[in-house]
Length: 460
Image (cartoon, rainbow, N blue to C red; front, side, top):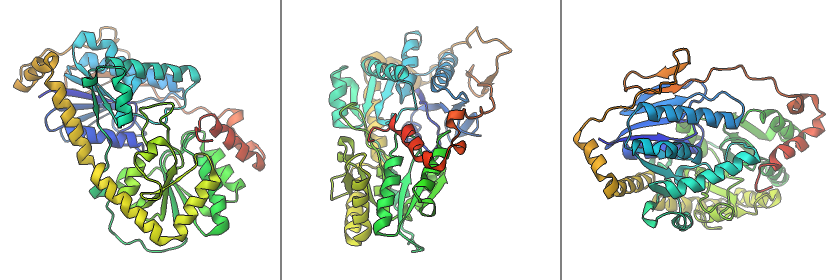
């Protein structure tokens, strides 16, 4: 049975939709492959865990600096590749794939670069690191043995940079049965506007809060923000909510387990994705996959008028599209849906039907399996994969000799020489004075939020 390592700089399970989509890849491959998953450790998750036949290895990254976190993860990935023998390494981001490609000549495995499961909002990085990430992505696309892309525009972009036969369209999907929530929702107050996802710069939070002010001038409503708040963002967020007089109208749920998302979405009247990437700067960009969940749960959606979103939502049919960064236009679209139940119901039904027709998780899994079958049939990999299927053993690579006995490591005895670095935990640092909004006047809170968002929010 061929051995596969799936790796990505994200948590599984976790609040990120990238982790959710990686689980679809795992399910697609685990029946006919021995699968390991190397991801980031979140909170108190186990370092090593088995879920059925799949082994999950989690790397702690406690450093506040994003570059240091990436480098720590890359070191863990190198050691994993040194310590175990894989036939395929499946990478969902450039900083993982670059590391894998560097050592590929030593091991001869096939490399899959999965742009369909990649992040659409990168971690907060400095401009220099952002340039490196873009450069790595281009290099990985050119050098990978198989590139999975989410859309036809992404395919056209990719085939101009690598051999066309290496590029396969593999769109994301949603578990339509899980999100087909049938329990009736009890009307217990004003209509609910739901935002679900990470609460951080670049997600359109400023636009949504300002739109909420306009909505409340016309109709009662309650805004629910469901998702983890990135460190350093909670204080300015709460201060901005107070300054906008939204305290009684905004509820923050913080982290919500993904298994609980269908019930949460079912309680919403309108679901909003206030930000989305565009195709112009990055042809491989994809719409926020939470839109698939909203639509699968038969809820009306409002999203930005971006090229990525237009591949999923026809304005006026599956949802309403607003001018990116325009809180007034966002408010108008939300108000229209809140005030017109028939329109809301028709759009929700059309979205529900489209997702079930084109974007199911089972369809996403079939696309991955088809792509892997094509990879295994190539002459350069056929003998290696046949060897794995017939059970012929290959010697495992030794543990790197530079690992001293005093270095903190985590090991799993179930597999040979599988060792990766454990980051020593450091207590969180006290916030810098510039970040301490408690000491600022209340009226300064909203400009502080604006400043934090404008640097990274594409739709501002």
